[in-house]
Amino acid sequence: MKASKELIIKSGKKFRLSDYDPEYTAKFKDKEAAENILKKNISSLSELQYRLKAENKRTLLIILQGMDASGKDGTIRHVMSGSNPQDCKVTSFKIPSQEEYQHDFLWRIHKAIPPKGEIGIFNRSHYEDILAARVHKIIPQSVWSLRYEQINNFEEMLVENNITILKFFLYISKSEQKKRLEERLEDPRKNWKLSEEDFKERKYWNDYIEAYEDALSLCSTKSAPWFVIPSNKKWFRNLTVSQIIIETLKDMNIKFPSLTFNLSRFKKIIN
Image (cartoon, rainbow, N blue to C red; front, top):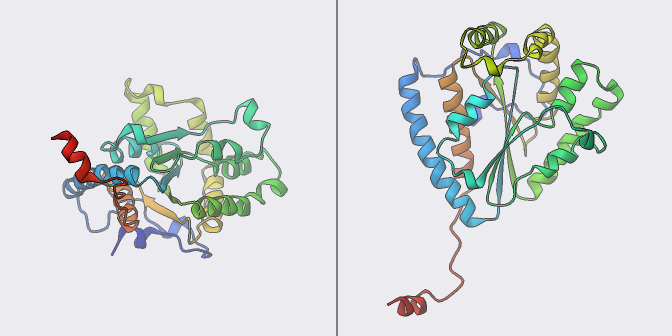
């Protein structure tokens, strides 16, 4: 069974994150076998990305969401290590700037969509404008409740314009988050990753879970589905995300473009 089939959230189906186990590692008992497959996937990604660029007709957009310390940065660092940085752009979405506040919430997102032939990665995304806005009551429910459909329409428009969207929710347990935050406190090399907000946000854990369950349920569509990635084990997280990316790119059946000139004529010139 494909990894994508097992972890996808079916369109229109209500679900609970409690039905998923963040410790889940499928058939893998340890990371050694998983890392061997990950290495092959990284190599495959390099070739598939090359084909995507050569064809220059389609785009792959990868969206990463998750609680603090769920591993968004780590996923990018490990899974995309074999990609060509010229044709792979990472965009991190933080608190909107004053300019961004003057536009609709999707304005800054649309600006960051990569061009044809490239891979784009969103570290957090337009979903923050439902999640954080809802949990912290930044805007009234009458506003954020409309955004589910607005996001679905926006993503559908992107898909209709040859942009394939992969949305990954990196699912960790609250105890695993605590462990990772404590590790960052104890390791001077990781202190820089911490902020006071990381600890304040833990108070809203249940609120975020509820907000995520609604967002993932309402915005997992046939054209742009969500995947729940069990992420307590970093090696399984990396393997699974890489596997779904590879499966998706292979399913695109990307072809090298044909020559637009007479090759034999130019061979004579070179000789």
